[in-house]
Length: 133
Image 1 (cartoon, rainbow, N blue to C red):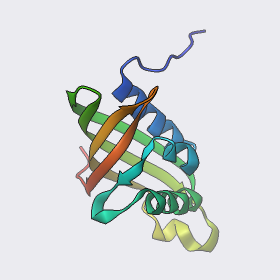
Image 2 (tube, rainbow, N blue to C red):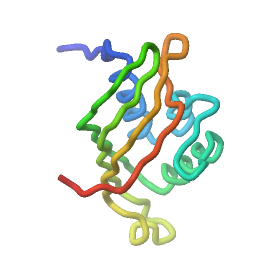
Image 3 (cartoon, rainbow, N blue to C red):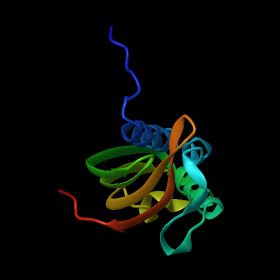
Image 4 (cartoon, rainbow, N blue to C red):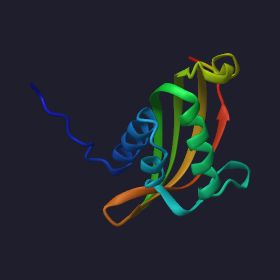
């Protein structure tokens, strides 16, 4: 039986933690990897981002995330990361959510990340809907 280890690269470790938190539908855990001054697309601040994540996670019974096409450009303890994220999920059957929420989506993300203490965090993010490969 093998044991899994956290990736040695801090960017890979950050992406793996964000993926695990999303799949666990744990907005607080996900939020631990957002910098206090996080800024998302359309002026979305950290509190709004966490509130939005909580609503999304509550609406789904299960969530699966696949991150690929990762490209990063480092500058010391910060980096610009580009990646594609495939989302799939099973919406809750209550309140007709299964008919309203998409079962899958693909997004292209651009992240501004930086090392803060022992862990790297996301300082900023923009995203757009992308075509499935």
